[in-house]
Image (cartoon, rainbow over all chains, first blue to last red; front, top):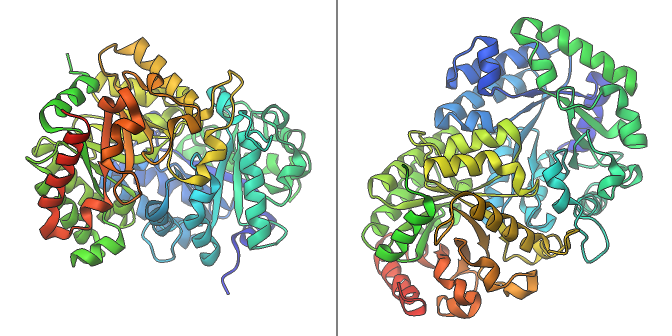
Length: 281
Length: 281
């Protein structure tokens, strides 16, 4: 039987820590790195990050928008990067924020969460504006294939507040509703210390502000972007997430990537040490 | 100065009607059409639809998930299809439902709404789970380039109901909030009979059930999927959307595509005639 994503993630936490390094080759960073703004540039950027992370941390999160920007050539570059990350046994979270219905959402699951697909990742980010039930095709596929999903719950940008704090008929905020729906999915599908369906919660928000609390996040993998450049400090991990801190994938992008290709290893080592100090592995 | 998307869409409505034909090469349809489930299959499927629509209707909506399923080769196939649709002067709505923040969302706008991009379309669908403000990069780019966006507001699947009817602090439902935010964007940016920012409203829902009404949709392009296979009848167009019916892009996919490669032209002609009868051009 395929090992569940929640178990695989727990193992990565235990052996390589909770740090997740973003792969964000936007035009500004490509320039800083001295790379061309082309499919070759985003490929070389991604391969360099994979090389630097290998042996230093366990998780990478490519932002697919920066590959899509270069069309099919960008996707071919992405396939090289994903292949290198798999070969290095890194856990890959494809940051794609996909969402749809029926055969369309099934197709996204086939693309990103199917062994042998050229775009195969270990997990993907998804959006449940159409309800968690609309993502059943992806959730089911993830479970069968030992893959994971991270559903956007509460994000760090202020414009998100009106939507994510809106009150559902059951009294929950939209953000808390996503978390509750994900918890119910995990409980009904693959009970384990850590479920295979996770959520995205920005590290710069106070949980209570969006109707969340640490106990609602029990047993749910939490992908938390926003550390470093966006303002959250890794030292605040326990303060921000309480007992749920041990489920958190601590994602840092700009703060590490801005060290440039020569400073990358040192920046990763420093961030990993901060994560270990904030929440021992 | 670049012509605004809203004006271009009005012209298409006047000259070629409101019918939009989906390009949905999922595995089931490829099989029915006798095409291989491969990058070549999705390319040939898309090119055949473009050929059949040309001269019969004015708008196509490729569902990008079915191309992404085949990785970079699928994206190369998509680039062929988009190029053929542009050459045929069809208006192309890329159904990608993208959403993100900052440089990431900017990258999506660069990919889909930039003249000269290999993935260039005339409009794209987006998701505002992170608030309409998070999409500013895409909305601004659309305006500069004469492109359009369609923001998911109310969708036809029952699982969407809890989220889309949740009440924001300003008293609006999440779905009505998206519509109001889009209306405000149009009013502040490019006043015209028809704005360049639109919304997606499923044709199988009653507007009142999600806190919407026809006057809220005044001046906003409405992409309405769900006609045909999903249960809404084109004859109901005015009943469903009232005075806003004249802003509606009537999207049909399965009901036309299931006619197969040889029945496509007749199915498009029949659907176009139904749309004209329901809401004269």
